[in-house]
Length: 479
Image (tube, rainbow, N blue to C red):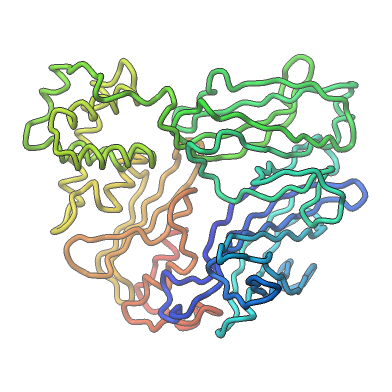
């Protein structure tokens, strides 16, 4: 199953040693299959151009990064690579991001992937990170590879590291698509379709709204293909009219009777002010019953309380309306938001949300934040009440913390959030770590939680100085 790893390899968020510039990169891994070699993992890297130090060369600027990769099964090294990567020639001081890709044949199973980066033009120690890898078995059944969205796709001659199925494909690493991006160049492969017992098969393309689990109208397409060991599929997916929201792009292999054989999904977030879910607040007709639920002195409060459940484009609009100080427009914006969100049920859904906002205000506000502005308040309003909460206000070794566990968030199961209060006052709990997609991920969360009487380790071994003592149960509670 595809996992998207987004990490700044500097680990600067919780390390006091990150005073010098560190190279930063985003990593993704995709699994494919080739009959002649079997399953293989493609490691894709996007380097933040400005995080690399450059030297004058060839009439421009060139940087160089030393890269070491190692894949282990337990303690056994099964694959590795070490090389130097030169950046493209940067001219006229225009520094752009650059990419790299490496492929490793691997048998099905669980692995750990280690990566080490060193800016060869800068001082400092290498940056290291380790992430898990899972390789599925694509050899025996009809399967779909991981789905790749590309930044650029051009005809290739086979000489580029980015070459696949006749094209050079430079990966698009982000899963957020603003209004300016309207087409997704999508690539995937279908394997072993001859096992279906027919000469042809179909592929169904659909888009699912992750907030309600329903397929988006007018986004479903069907294509027909001949069976083969490997069927490559490269196609643009038009998202021009897809409203702001979170979605799953789904591809299914289907038989003639439309039964689904296998399915693969790609999750993404869309920001699109012109989509059909946007309602123009200025044109809204005031609903007396709706407006009666909002007192004159609470309009700003309730409009701002919508931010936790709003997309980025909606947040921008809400902040602009708040800045205008126009109370009538603010009232219309609140009503427009709920009309766009809930349709005919907008009043009932608003009243339910209002009660949640008031509850969050009572539980989580502090001296400098309203309840909806706190991390706990935002998570509660965005995802609903947690299934279980473990709260520890007193610990011999740890800051006060809470661990929230959700049985279900949309299509996701067993997601957790760790909040802590390093200030020890004001009810000011902050989000420290979550395994929910799109939320803050901090692999060193236990280190930060134990900092109350623990000195930090180093970037190579962030857990080196964690002191284990009686009462330190956060790891057990998290699991």
